[in-house]
Length: 196
Image (cartoon, rainbow, N blue to C red; front, side, top):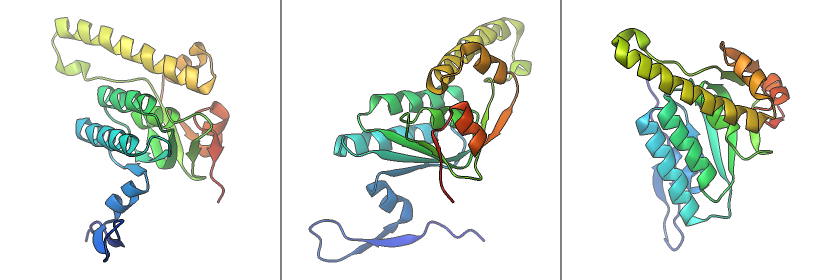
């Protein structure tokens, strides 16, 4: 049986009485954002909207992006990454379970020195994939060209933000490279492992 979204009390400034709001809305007010699903267009648009709104509301306080995601689509993920780099507040990224594929790209996209993973979290990098088997030959060739451009973009960002060479990152992305929190820290994907 699903538990639903818990309700918590909150008192708006100037209100005499508290009201009940859902837990996530309460946490948004504290600048805490969650990615707990696959990165798709809807999730991407929600994250972008929250980051922009909270940035406009106060551009001096950090945002906290908690990540527990299997990854997802490259284009929506790049849109979130670009927004993270665009908004004024620092984005602290925190991996609380799994940051795989595009989710690991968002994890590494947090403010350098403010990227964290919990002790039992896992991070996975790999090259972007596509559904070549579903397309005709002409589209296949175009899709491969675009996929190679995307892979190059992702590799460059990983290399820049981890301090690894392009060659090392490119080699490591050839397969699913799973890393524990301490291995992700040694690789440069995160800066700190949270203390138990």
